[in-house]
Length: 266
Image (cartoon, rainbow, N blue to C red; front, side, top):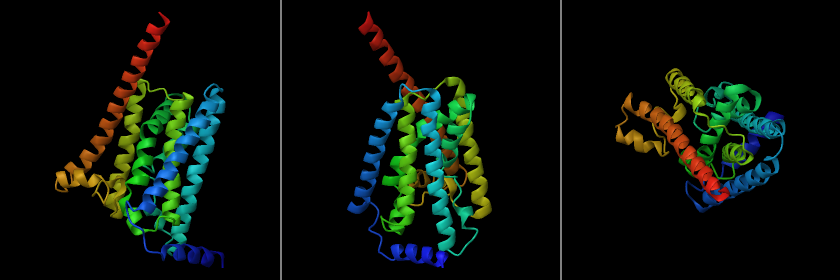
């Protein structure tokens, strides 16, 4: 009875015609989520800025619990409503945005350089995941109504990733030490390899390594004419380059501010 109720509730939601990608409903939904994300990150980040490392990390712990709980509920509902107990194989955290289901808990519960690198990873990719996931998820918004279980859950998890990213930098938890870059790169490359293997075993498109599927990755896919080697390599190299450039910009801004403070104190 309970399972039938879940099926009915979700199916009724999905019976509505999707409003469509970049419709005013989609853009309004995305903008509301992004604004709430930024406001919460600023308020909570500033409130914990001068707190202890343990207090700051408690926010990350609750963030990790919240994002993974929402995702687990979404996956369970997807398995129930599809009558496919193995549906979870196609819901693994092997997309750029869903990597945060791994890295946010890693940042919250690990220690030492791994923790520093994980915090930096969330900081680097959290905002990008939020913006890409709520504004540019063309496939999702063309397939489901805006206010459906699928899109609401995905919108919440993406913006929680963005919240974590902003909170980390506002509260001062980021380290961005160059010695930790190999670990940060390793996280990205490790997920990339797992996604590539999973794609061939399941015939799926994790990390969009097989094709663009209506996302901005279509630009790269078309550029390389869907080449089975050059296209996935270009996607991974783009992420690696993004990490490198992000670090350069971060340190350039930090050094500029340090020089400005030195002159002001002189």
